[in-house]
Length: 75
Image 1: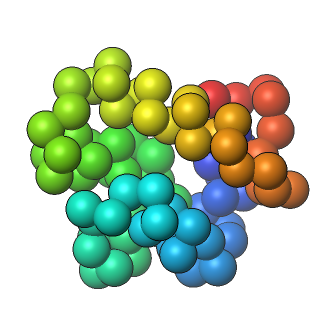
Image 2 (image 1 turned 90 degrees about the vertical axis):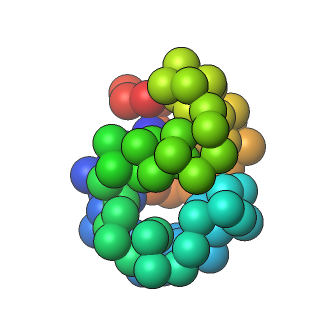
């Protein structure tokens, strides 16, 4: 997943992220602005997931989302 590109297109993809992690508010996603570490931290905080489990969620989400923003060079 190319998170640099994700940050560039973040506003266009908030809805897609919100579909996956509905526990995160629109305001939290706006603050995240595509920053993977911040998003992972909020996901852990809101859902009670361990760091490793949050990472598995990101990897699984990447597999499901087919988009030009994503590539195989990055997590």
